[in-house]
Image (cartoon, rainbow over all chains, first blue to last red; front, side, top):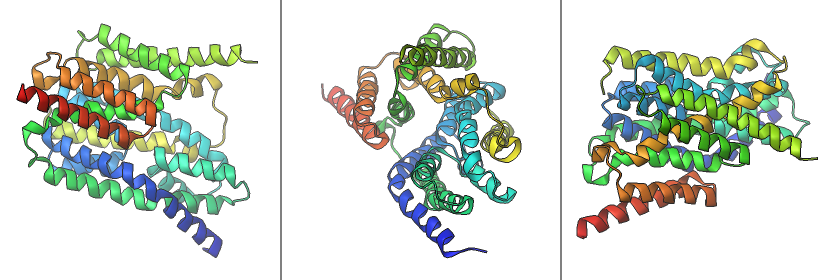
Length: 236
Length: 111
């Protein structure tokens, strides 16, 4: 049975999601445009945005496809980008672990950066919320974001082929990646991971597409974890 | 694009299923068992470990110029990074990067 307070948690979630549309709209529009430019057809582009529904991984897979990487390397790089979501999944267990399986499955499908960050912040601010209210809130946040993701991908895919080459869309992807990455550089450990990633990737750029990147990513994860260990130990 | 249609669909299907399984992992299958601290520590750095290594060669050797370093593109990337660090906003960062890119390309077209 749905109670009024479950409904109000859902509505509150929807309201809290509205500002994210400013990020989601251009991001998914760009994916539609760049995927179409790269040669994906409409169905494939929409397949990415509905089945994968993870911006950074979609862009990563697309870039690897353009680079001519093999299927296993494309998958490994794009899945590596998404591994952080295992952490999100684990962090949600204490809040949502008692919900029915179908609700947990639905929440897993829409568990991305914005829904996760907003919801966990809310749960921490309102510890008195029940698991049902927490689930309703999470799905509330996802409700405006998810259709917007599909719709703007579609729009981008439809207008993609009409954009003239003078607009230098080739560089939309690098700019998107840099803009995604910059706000992530919050701590010394994040900066160390990023620098390691860049250095090793450039040093190994002669290897077949994607191979050097995977080695670089592994070294960078270790560098980040190492610096985190050292900096937390240094603090009292 | 060197992949066939079937290979593209394979990427989409496996990436979609894999991503769902990652998101569902603890919430759906594993439950409330605690994860080892070292694993959490590694997972925290996955996006920042993959994306910079992927983007740097694209910035230094853009495909559109046949792999030759291109000043407007390089400056646009630097401006995007600076704006992102400064504002912590994806939208602002992309906006400023685009302005610098078009200013650079426009200026070169006139000179």
